[in-house]
Length: 79
Image 1 (spheres, helix red, strand yellow):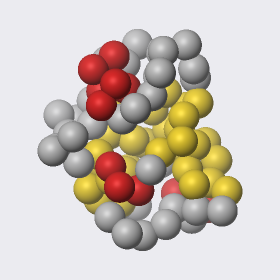
Image 2 (cartoon, rainbow, N blue to C red):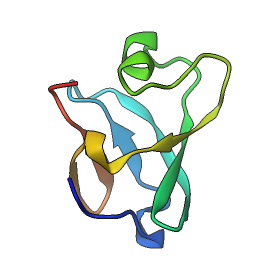
Image 3 (cartoon, one colour):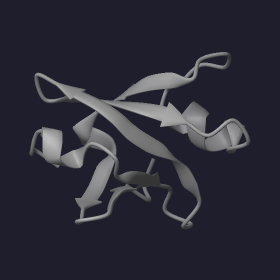
Image 4 (tube, one colour):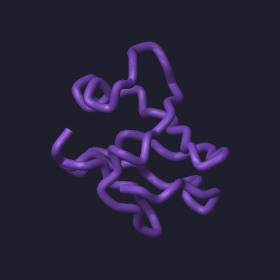
């Protein structure tokens, strides 16, 4: 996905391909979205996104995004 994140994306859920909610966009600055990850979410999903353990907020790269709707950001299946 080539689009950049905008402030209108703040508050949207970030959803894995299987429908699992990973977290929520808490901040967008200069086209980069920051996700607050839910503590009990899958280590596998975080690993595929390149997110390390022990953090609560992560940068979300648009290259891993399949779609952006009014309420959520969907992660690509092929990661």
